[in-house]
Image (cartoon, rainbow, N blue to C red; front, side):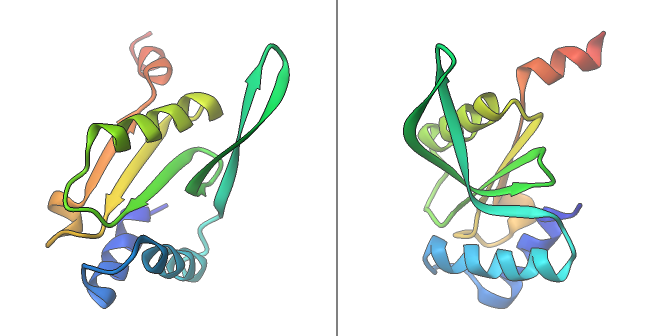
Length: 126
């Protein structure tokens, strides 16, 4: 599963400076072409005391039922973006999340930020 490779391909073809929605559609095409299993605009359930609340949390891409991908086209990734991915990871109980920012010169060097769920970090040490 090479999501970063797909993002690099999109960035190579489209460049930077476009809206996030454009990159999302391009990523959908690229992931489909690479036969990567994913869901776009995946609804994240929020459960309180065993009741699912009517809250519209959606991640941009949910890859192989184990990776949250949030796409951005911003001047810099801010703590609120980090919190968004971490919250989604915790709610879905998935091991990994990535922010991909297309508003950069090089996706591989500066356009990605990876997160590992604390729960899964502890499992590796045991």
